Image (cartoon, rainbow, N blue to C red):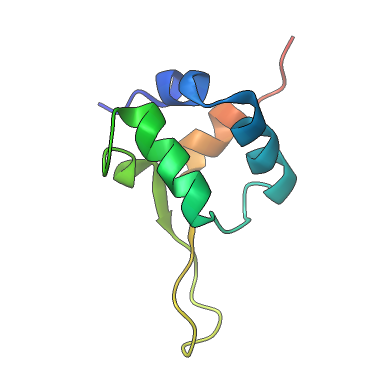
Length: 79
């Protein structure tokens, strides 16, 4: 089972700020993918927390976006 809450909690404040800046549909940069890997436990461990975005242009590489449940945790209102 994915520890979505734990991964989000282990992201650095600047990484969370960057994710908030790009929004739930924004493509993940290699730097953010690396941050998610680190927060998930190491290289390659964050693979399941992102998915391929819809194909917009077949001539461009597909982008990664956050999974829906990760977005729900990351963008949930804080009380």
